[in-house]
Image 1 (cartoon, one colour):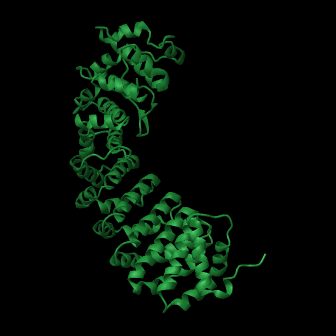
Image 2 (cartoon, rainbow, N blue to C red):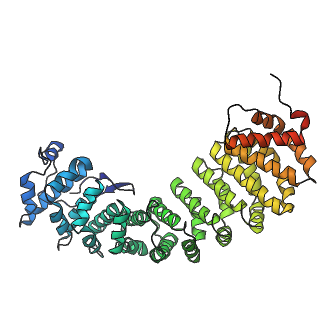
Image 3 (tube, rainbow, N blue to C red):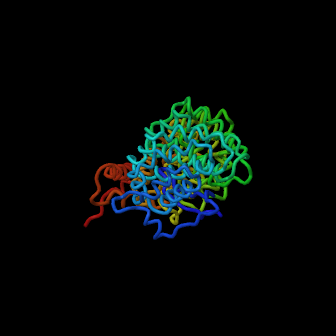
Amino acid sequence: MSSPVETTVAKDIGSISLQVKPTDEDWQEENDSELDSYITENQKIIPAIVSDIRSDDRRTRLIATIKIRRLLQRRPPEVAVQPVINSGLVPAVVEMLSINDNKFRAEAAWIVTNLSCGTSEQTATVVEAGAIPKLVAMFPTDVTDVQLNALWALGNIGGDSERFRDMVAQAGGIQPPLDVLDAPEMYTEKVRNTASRLVLCYLNPHYAKLGLDVTSTIIPILAKFLRGAPKNVSHNTLDYAVKALDQICANEAAAELIITTGILPRLVELCNTGNTDLSYNAIHCVGRFTAGSEASTDAAIEAGFLEALKPCIFHNTVTIRETACWAVSNVAAGSLSQVHALLKAGLLPILVRVVSDKQEVQKPRNEATWALANLVDTAMVHPELVDPLIEGDCVEAFSDAIGTYHSNTQRLAVQSLQKLLSRESRNQDRILELLKAADGIARLRALRDEKGTSGYRSEVRTTAHEILKEHYPDFARRARV
């Protein structure tokens, strides 16, 4: 019979949901009170189980092993892990990883998975017993339970700390999940999902980056997987692979390698899936390219990223709208040709709409304001862009941004207005008329007259006052109290 799905906390890579079939035909599942009886008052496993797990009789040994697994599976790590360690069972469990019996190997790998859900000191006990090379040596195997549990165990150990991650990598532990993703049709979706998550675990952003020699082997396999994954691959599995690429492409040299795989059009396609997490991570991943070199930004644009971002800016999820506007702001800070591509894609009126939408939450409005501010900065170098910005209602949008009472949004707006007014004498009267008609004078005065502000917000108030004093002298005097 099949055991029920159980949940165990995994380190850094989310919760574990395992479904293995390790039971013996004579095996009866314990009730909760029986599980509690396995632990003695002095925090050890009862002698009968300790003795049975070292028995020469296969059935006796298997039942004892399953009891330990069930205890770890059904009780939190802070309750169950230390008694197993205190009883000296870790070496015996680790030894099972290499015996010629797949039932024991699957059970032992599951036990190691749960033992390494505890503290770093508890995980160290598993590592010191030699678990890492034995787990790696379990591959290749065509036994699903062994594949799944061994991958989880490697993930939990590698997810504990940078030191253990490096030990797993040095032992060849990166290759098993890559082999799964390289031939995904040969594995179950559970195994594919675990492999994808494990690769992401190895790329933990809190750890030192893996060397380019390592990531250069990961990149083509992830790209191949994302391009040709079987139809029954879940969005969750794809999401882990996208997040893994997202972590890798923070390195410019690695980003260049990713571009050479031709994966960017596929990542752009994933920006508009029906799955919120996958869409968000795909946008963020391609957005990293727009935050990189000019060549990386060009590659994202050529892959159709700007068109893909347009529906994302109106997505019903705030983080997607915010991230899409952030990616556009990166392009707006780019080269003249990139800005022209942005304008040609029709993104300017969309940005203006977001900034001016009083029903929109602040984060997308701030990112959209930043994008407009970047366009103004580019226009300071390329004056031919000023007219399209004015005609595109940017002045009115900056007035609305001042009215948000969000510090950074207001700062971007007043600084952009000051740049336009100081540089463009030809368009100055027009800009001033538009700003006045958009209630800009009242908003500048309200910003200037704020009480109790300091730091850079004080500088924003000063900029607002300078605009009023220089361009609207009749409105520059403070109201009498």
